[in-house]
Image 1 (tube, rainbow, N blue to C red):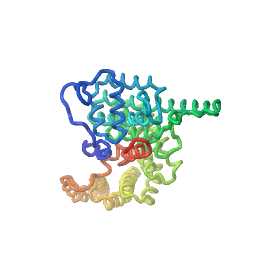
Image 2 (tube, rainbow, N blue to C red):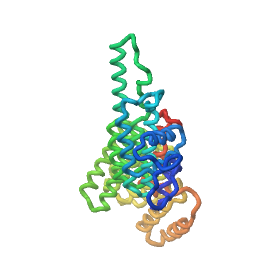
Image 3 (cartoon, rainbow, N blue to C red):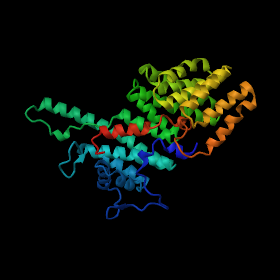
Image 4 (cartoon, helix red, strand yellow):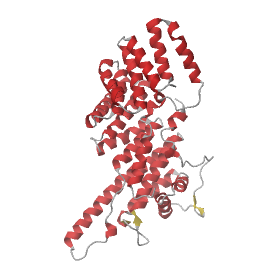
Length: 390
């Protein structure tokens, strides 16, 4: 699959990528060499991100050495008692800055994944998730302490700045990381984020959809590595997740489509057909109808119904006229039904269309990386709901 097609899914999210550099980065602050282990500079970078200057903050943090990241985040965690909902004193740390740091590392990690730099990607993504868990625990403890103080010292209410309120929705946060990593082709990296999202919101159909997409991607990876037992377990996990999504949302046509395709890949066409037929009949999205018809054509072929396969592939072409996948399926079905002469015109048209460069890409090519726009939509929800300035 061409990398350009893969990046379509999260291109807006990656818009702030820093320019490529050669050699080791030189640690520098705003006005000279960066002091080692300077928590204030780290917080200033996070505050810059939180204030809305994401591009500048990302350029800065992506130049930090990986041990510096570890030291800075560890130093921040040691300052838990100085967290405030609003910084008033010099030693106070604004909780919004912490949430800015969480999202800054998340975006930096995904950008490093895009660059295929797995070690810095892991460091930043780990920093992001660990800081999210720490911040949630710190906020809960702050609320408990405030409640206790209000009950004990009724004549001396606590400072409102001590009441910390999280604004990052953890469900959307983990969905965003999982879908973004999957969109870049890293199902293995996406897996722990999908698992965490399910722990946060096991009844949410979008969460289950993402978990199913990630497990499907893992199944493909394991099968290519000839790890058949692992691939089988991943397929089972994907099927369970897609079924959960459909259970919790009868109109979850994306999950229904993907469940049907998963069953089809396991030669379970009898089970797959009703699912795909419902998507084809009820979905209003042209992409979903096209894919459902494409997969119904394959299901009919599996069951030896050439005429039904031809009809489905022609319907897929009507829904997406530039589809090479539908043309290939139609040519194959025609050849099986009526011989090679029947498919010659379709094959010629397929070769002609392969030279075209205009128009949207065939959704079939983007299918393995999850629903289009899912990663960007999840990150937008996180940004919109946080106290971080968009």
